Image 1: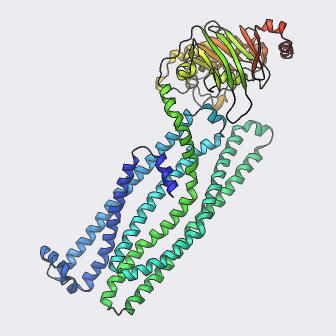
Image 2: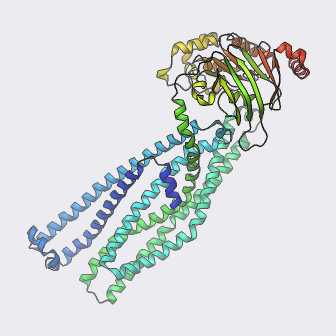
Image 3: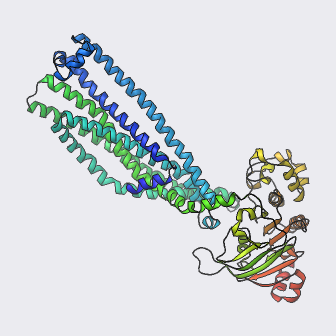
Length: 600
């Protein structure tokens, strides 16, 4: 439990110690009002059963004189008013406390989910390379909800019910020490045995169910994300069955935990009846009169009515906490791991002006290996990209082309070596450098939104500059397409561009890259998935930018890079040759073979 509290306090916003302390004070006030309410019932019974004894009770004689209470009727009237007043006050305070607690809890939900989402968005690129998207979706959408609704909320409820129960027990101990100790002893045996027998198993169930939650999301992602392939290959049943298996196992575990939560109720009820019989037997054995027994029985009856659901809740809440506390670990671990990067990320993003590029990009002895890997992906790679020129990295798959581009983009940090722009190491002003880059990947992600919002991707709609959108559309040669669309730039293009062609998707990717008018355009096999005619059209659109933009390309088809100024031939993580297309064809046999294969 200590470890759980530590993790909860870490993921909560700064300053929540004060708010939690105030909630604790409010709980103590609520517990005090509950005890007063319970104490008022047997007192009121005494007013009715033996008013003369109450009026002659020496510690209260001063109060009776102050209030001018002299008769049974006065006592009954004042007692009734006090009883009603206490319960009105208790009810009003309870409503206030419940609202305050609910507001605190659910504000934490949005703050924590935003904090986690922010951490994921600012995480190093290598973090995303090593993680399954379904885990991140589960953590952000499901685990955060469980942490707030079933861990933090449960801890507060345990604190509240625990304080309430403790206050009532202390009150009973003061009023009837022997009887109270015996009741506590017998009740403790039942509750303790239940917790001892079930809690280890409950935590294991929680860990298993967390895995099933992830697998359910993964099955949905893979099935719906690959619906086209699944439909053509008749594989729908595989993904539906995969989801069904995980959902069934998850439901079975939830059935177990629901059943375990219900066990305390009959146990507590039986124990309560036995305790009331025990109390009656003890007081009769002690030789007390019925006038003395009735208020005490009323007191314990009222206490039992309040304690019974409290004990039931405490058992069920603790069981639920043990089951759901596993949701805390992945969120805590990710925040702990990522937030050391966030400060540097935010500081770097605040450097507003883009790095100006007038001379050249120079790579000096770049070495890179992926985290956890032994083999180098890049080994002492050096090259130059003159401003305004078009260069391309070519070579077989696995040669390191994409890795070198990711380093130029600032997504990966080299183990050693530098990338300098006009003499400035890009790692010193990474965000400022990225603001001067337009990136066109092989697969363009398109949101289920308007064409305008997809070109100005990630910019709030109110801040979109339509002049920039228009210029980007023209540069990407999308004018004809926009003219044919029913709503022009406001046309919805469907999730991942399902309502447009592959060539149009690539052109939107080019327009997106050009929206902020970058000096450098980077293409990572951006035409490899297109047919020859569409590829030539896209290549023509890109070539029209030569001279105005510096173009860096990775190409699967060498026909795409024929007109580049410099080609760097890569093999096994090294640059083995360089030159124009024609010079490499004439001087390098390996490149010549690649060119012949592409032409065929």
